[in-house]
Amino acid sequence: MLKKRRLLCLALGSTSLLTACGFKLRGSLLGNDLPFKTLYIEIPPTSTLGVELRRNIRGSGEVQLKEIREEAEAILAVTSETREKVILSLNSQGRVREFAIHYRVTIRVLDNKNAELLPPTQISLRRDITYNENQVLAKEAEEVMLYKDMQSDAVQQILRRVASIQRPTSAATPQ
Image (tube, rainbow, N blue to C red; front, side, top):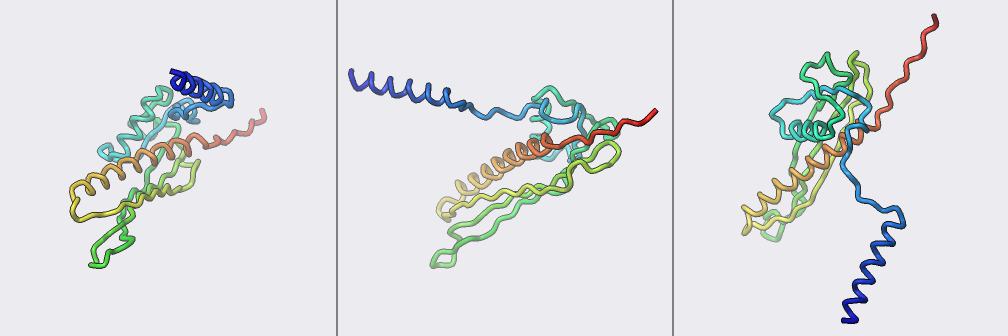
């Protein structure tokens, strides 16, 4: 009984210390952090990256996605999206033991007058994966899962980079 009380006190003490230091879980990026009220995403609607990006922006409720490029304040263009698999090591029989998978996305942001707000920026993610020829199906499923995870990470990085854009302030015109 005394051991349980000590564990309870330890748990309560550690949580109070965490809250006292200002620790809080990182939430999702909210749309009001984006510097635009309307946005056009230039990526095919069937792209899984585009679907996830649109879902994250719509989920915020603050930024309105436009279907026509000319109606938006800003255009988020995904200029390239690539996946690559590279062999890292081989076993003594010359079979793959380990490989790396790469996921790269290049984006740029323009305003409605085609002025560049964010130059072409590449987001590059990499994961290492071991391979076992006796578990082919499991390793293929793991690879698919890792690509999906990297895509989600890329979406969050894209949103953070778009949120960091500083809108140019227009100089007041003399009258």
